[in-house]
Image (cartoon, rainbow, N blue to C red; front, side, top):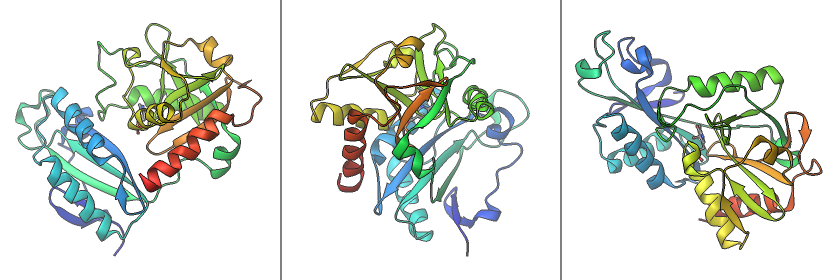
Length: 286
Ligand SMILES: Cc1ncc(COP(=O)(O)O)c(C=O)c1O
């Protein structure tokens, strides 16, 4: 049997893992999700991911018909069935099947599915030499319109920016917020280093509070690397000594150019390297 997907309580072959065209996730992008990572058989920061999932669901008045403990068991079951030790886990909660009405009142039960698979986000050489990114022309959704803290199935804002990255032939795009400050990338948070200090945009810039971002801030504190959350302008990116992105899939990926401008000397900087080493130790040893 190929890969199996956990769907509403059962494991089904991936070819049979299908969502109804009447599910409001399909009709309106109405739902939430999480991306988690398994290292050496253990799910990394599972509690934080499940907490964010339940917070996202609560923010859109979506009742998840399982407890976090039940979802943790479902993840274990799916990983075991697929015989995975190091993998990516996608946990999705859909609003469920309803009428064509935009209001979700006819959707009586949320749908939940879990996909587990091997992952390779970026080419290994990029971790050694760095990746080029651009700043996107599309701005991040304003928090007052739809908070990026909600990890929802509405990713069009991110997809529009990612299309710009693809068109430019680079791996990621950083979005500015509605005020012109640096916010985050399409699927990653951003950090820079300047004069030995680690800087990342604050929560108020309207970003997804990345769990990898949090781990990096914790590691920086442990390693006594001066760090601060601060509003950054595009110029701050261009004049940074080092830059890297963080995400569950990407882990820590160094950036060597932004909008074709070389960052630092164009190689992976010492603080980035130090944090990458510490991160790998952390995910493997915890
Ligand atoms: C828009 C966005 N920002 C940041 C991140 C990074 O968050 P995390 O480190 O929790 O994966 C993600 C990925 O989940 C994302 O989709």
